[in-house]
Image (cartoon, rainbow, N blue to C red; front, side, top):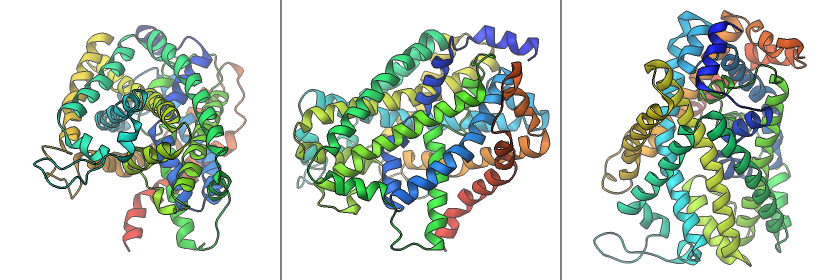
Length: 470
């Protein structure tokens, strides 16, 4: 747009191709939320009914917010702090919120990434049976009652080592830059991820009894349908979009600032959506039928979070034919998905440091590395030496996750809707989507969503915890 914007892009680099941008943005969107949270929610909220609700919101709500953030990034050519201030000077504070969200998510996300690396190494070295069956005694002695996962996070040394290795890999990629680091890594990792997830899902569906799990996953369950369940399903589906599409984290604004001006904004967003939704659905084809078969059809086994990923699934792989190999492939898949997301989180924070402190990329990445390690160790120690310390009854990792995902991200998304829908006007985004003669086919949908539907959805997410309590 302006000379200043073009200069900004030249200084900090950019994606060298459209496919590079799409794969990097899709890689950011495809993360741990797709692999374990999406299948769990689908199973919990009526199978096919949740899938239908999610798909509708992905192509409407998710599309509107994602194209808004990418357009802001590409139009301003700045990091999140400078971008919001450039859109409207009085909304500059939103940029600091948009920077704080990934800064808080990145450390604890890397802690979980370290857990994934541990399990990947465990299965690759042929010790998957230990992760599935072996019990350990608590520190100080006593009966062996701890699972492999509980024993691992309860230690100090190993969790710290795997966490540090994971953060270091992320920092190295970010140091290499946008085109030589993020784009090149995404072009390699995303196709590998797609091949793995398709292959494992096909294998899972060939197991005896898998079709019953598939029906449980994809067929709508209206047996206990009610207005209350519809409300919770909508809230869960919209909330999942934040996890699945990297919305309201500042990531898409950052990546948008690296996007080439001549590439179609609308077309790119649609392709990112398809890739992200396909991976989430395929993850469900791996997890839901597999767990369903080896738990004897128990829906209670499909728990969210660490329990599903690190306790239940190793048992499923242990019971599978060729389970050691499938388990290794699965955790390689999860490691790739986690890595592409955490790289985008680190890049978002690094871009802010570079811009605000006029710092070179390598030096800025080192600063973010140190910050990530220091804050991440808080979450690591929250499961061992600081296990007795809680914040509002939550361990540190859960606290950071709850504050960012349930409070900060919906607030940022709501404020973004107000800024674009009612302060600067939707034309701000439409002009960017239509630059150089490009068509914006979903203009009417975008206007309706950003001005009316998206703000209502944000309010629903914010009030859902209180409504649920009542």
